Image 1 (cartoon, one colour):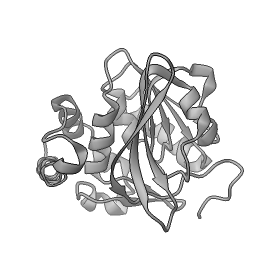
Image 2 (cartoon, one colour; image 1 turned 60 degrees about the vertical axis):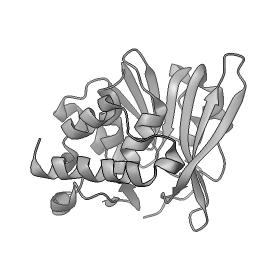
Image 3 (cartoon, rainbow, N blue to C red; image 1 turned 30 degrees about the horizontal axis):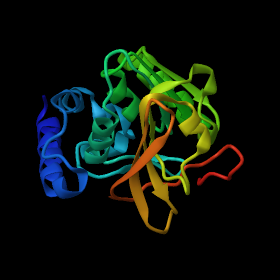
Image 4 (tube, rainbow, N blue to C red; image 1 turned 30 degrees about the vertical axis):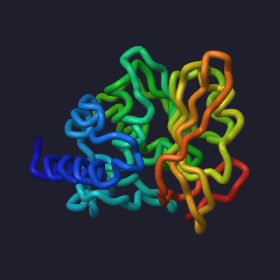
Length: 223
């Protein structure tokens, strides 16, 4: 572990302790923390920002999008509770960092990105770095990826004004959906949606967050 990675892990642990009354846990899954320490975050940010790659904050990656702060990546991964045999769906590939984290904790990651340039660059980056169990498509995240459904877990890395019904439909009974919900300039909440074996869902608000908006194929994305 590099000095930067060591400091990043320490900042994540400190923020978990600070927010434990909101997130309902004193520590994150050791498997999640191990992967956070191993995946080279500096490879997923623009070259001119690599000196800031391990800071506990979001960074711009172009096209009006960001790579989420390490604490949020770790927390959302922990809430999803990925397991070795799981098939997971990610909405919002971005630079591919969250997909890389998930890929080390499950069998397969399917990721949807609406910005073609980002999606294609992320696919090349993940292949070059050896994350071979990630498949990316360019498309509308609001529609999910029905061809590979149902999923054991779904993670959304941008804020939607509502929980997309297609994503709930594509969630396997017993599965979890982690998604920030709210408007770009209004209040956003990180939500955990759990589907029980009867197909009914329960929602839990975790904590307030600030994400870029989830863009659909029929919506103009920020440039």
